[in-house]
Amino acid sequence: VLHVESQPRGDRPDFPPQGDPAAVNNIDERSTAANGSGAAAGYPPMYYFPAAVLYEVSSGPLLHRIEVMRLWSIALGVVAAWLTLLIGRRLFRGHEAAAVALAVACLVQPELSQQTAVVNNDALVIAAGAACLLAALDLTRPSGRRSRWLCGLAGAALGMAMFKSFGVVFAPVLLLAWLIGRARTPKPERIRLWREVGQTVAGIGVTLGAWMAYAAAFGFHGASLADINPSPGPKDLRTYLHVLRRHWFHQLRVNWIDQLWGDFSYVNTPFPTWVQGTILVITLLTIALVIAWAAKTGLAFLRARRRTAAGVRDEPGVDHTANMVVCIAAIAATFAFFLIAGYLNYHRTGRNDLIQGRYALMLLPAIVALPALALRTLRPRISALVPTLVAAGALVMLNIGGVALVVERFYL
Image (cartoon, rainbow, N blue to C red; front, side):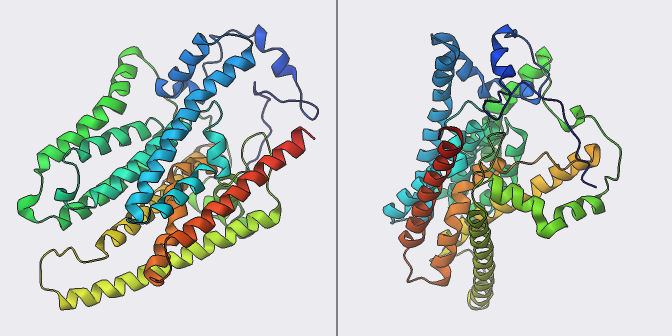
């Protein structure tokens, strides 16, 4: 039912002593204009053009040039870290130390730190995702407390994220945040609707729209599920759900626990089972905290509705509730999108191998901050600094452990 099949070897390097070095040895014989049939060939140039420029302006052996190309990913990692710090300041207002701890925790998360240190096509969507989350948090505020050009910036951030198709998950999140902010703004103070819509369209137009127009004019075909060869076998929704449920949701745990937190790609250096189990327990506890927060907030909202007359009131705690809603919506929208995308791939190919945990790295600030945000509602006496410091410390240790695994396997 899994339709697992053998696949021919590709041109990825496979280093000795365990691997076959043929691809590395033959790389000089390959044409630089070849191999344009892969999925990556359909990505917009923003993913590879800056790195290609760095390759051309650098000199020396191939490996030296690759080291220079990595600077593009590193620069995007710095941008993502800075945006995460700003996100922390929005989520934990008045607690600068908690904001710094959140930025550190995300920066050293094993998979994110790896993706922003190598030549790859995800560092851009990680930074753009952080920009979308930051824009969404600001959009929940009344119009008078945010920039009048925020919708344009949000549109540009969304357009950058959508250079990779799964960045579209931020569209409903930004829309929800905008609706919250508009509802919290008295009608006389609201920015004209046409202006905000125009700004958003313009922001998307100068980013994703510009590339789409160029691609249409010159015949560049982006990667899509239609490019994947179909295969026979049962591929209905019921079978797909059965695949997800097998062995206590093994496939979901592989994607969203193992891969997301450090076990990814052909350099297979997984953490010990007890580490993955601990991360799973923390994930389940976080979900329980969110459910408890939702119950408490819902009851408080119903009581407030009975006591408060009609009209919008910016009561204490509204910002915190809006922040929680945005973070939860971002995570839920992403999870739902990837379940649907996974099914579409399964329905065509019969294989459940499309989704990878690193696709959720753009949500890392929301994921890491969620326990602290929920605890602030359930236990107001607990400072936001405590859970964020615990998260930062745990992820520093996880990062060191991940590096140690690589060193042990490949260098000792």
